[in-house]
Image 1 (cartoon, protein in one colour):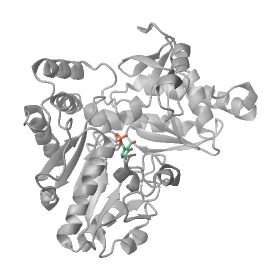
Image 2: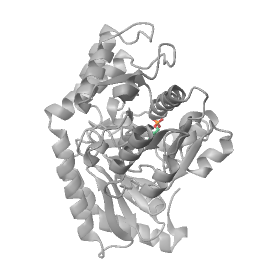
Image 3: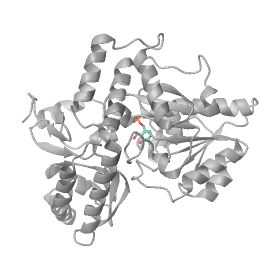
Image 4: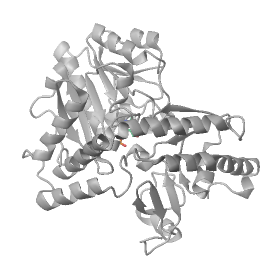
Length: 417
Ligand code: PLP
């Protein structure tokens, strides 16, 4: 069933005349969603195992978000940063309550913006320590992704994403992710902050070695540098806990959130804990839309539903079920070597760079997944994913991988159109 009056073919034909060619996308347009399922413009149904890149925490069309956004739109949709609004205060109170530490929140609209705020905060910290400006450098990780705006891009490692846009804001040193010695050597008297993801997301859902974040915490404390954790993808229940860093028992100085926070309504947050909360001063930063009542109401609905429906435990259960089912297939199907990650944030790993072919075969079979790396498929479904949908993907995987193997063996016969 589709509510669309158009088709995939029609939309694809019109696309290039009106949209900038920034994305290489599969040949479908999505027009409708309900729960964990979406439909394209031709009426084909898919189980959504990517959720708008780890965004649609409650799936599509969840009544709690619909109700919250509708009520808020009727009452007051936008006031700008000229005025205070109640949902922003309520949401900040909720987030700080979940963190369990004294903190202050700056709201924005995306992950990149949350990291921009954190970067400015780091610069303030560095200048507070050394007004002469010799303490403004930042350490980030190889394989990291922090966003595409110029500041966030300066923290993002991939050369192909950065180099065409250089010069970027300077003073960023990259160290191998997971290497404690390299991090310790890099954090010297010139460094104001360390930016890390609790697990590398865009590099392929790669957890760090045990103890890495705890060591990073200690290194930052010893050097009086801020530990800034980018939880844009890992946060808001994605791994079965509210924030990915809970697994490591560390408390960051700054935490950035976006993606799942609004369940599909754009919102980001930069949360500073303890002394870091006073770094940005009046006039230092701002956003017209940040903390918009509509987006904050959606985020409150997401948090309330995760809590009331016991979704953190659900994420752990269904994520483990998925991982167990996938691991049972290793050795029995082409390419598959394993599954990594936590909760409902996983990557299927392959012994060859076949992920694009697997993504296409999965789509053909009615499953939306993401070739996050040449040899890895990312799964980041809604947190409400029913066990039956997880089981369905496990049951479908052998046929999907065999189809990908046929295409890989004979590229003329199929593949990405
Ligand atoms: N940080 C991380 C860890 C991300 O995964 C992403 C997006 O994938 C971003 C930042 C950028 O977020 P946005 O696309 O909302 O700007």
